[in-house]
Image (tube, rainbow, N blue to C red):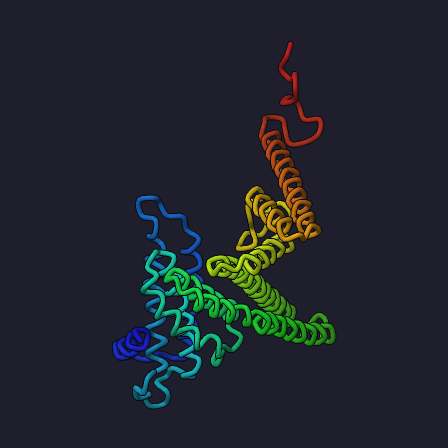
Length: 355
């Protein structure tokens, strides 16, 4: 496909680099790309930051392709300083998947498809992943996006098949992240025991190890959250795909699953934590009311009642969160007034300047 042809051209135009240098390029590129995705560009240039991200990802893909020496190209003597070909191919697939997502987000879906298709096979196989941060979620995301593209082509069978693959990836991905967390915890236990036995010695080294453990734990927690968010999107897209296929019952089931996951992971307010689990409380309540109507029509009155109770609870929780937010704002404004900031502070109260 075009992804393979692009890989050949990329490898031919670059020299391999040291494996450590490729890892450093991977880390810096993904970090900067994430920062660029968070930028809100002006209306007159809505994709400016995404185009910059695209160029960074292309650089990474081209370099990884050169290190992998794919499709029968001769591998330079000694591996070309590029280390594991398998690892380089996996990094290349990561860059391709991110590029495909970038192209979809900038409304260039036709160009995204071959990149995502080429990347999925490598990401799902997992050879060369070596516990790479975010790799588990990225495989699910790529399948989700291919499902969207198939739906856009009105190929509902292909869309459902791809989303089913994404669904099947969830449990292995979740277990893989949990295994990493368990391994990290075990290493931490060993290190803490060693530090206790040598109490007072090597304090600087102990502090460094503790900081490394904390950073690694944060990365694993972020990976776990990313897997859950990708799975929530799979559920959401399955609801749409079944609806497009005319299967109202399955569409309702997946819609309910999506809403339940949002509620379980965020709570009634709908905004805490952000990501794909965040939701607008009023829209969520409207969707719950619509589901209630569907279940009433099916004679499933208990399910209909649960939907209505959930809608009522979400709206009440959102109003309570709004009251807390307004209270915090008033407290901040009060503390900013002259003499404010504490109980009994002079001025600023009702009638403070009255006669």
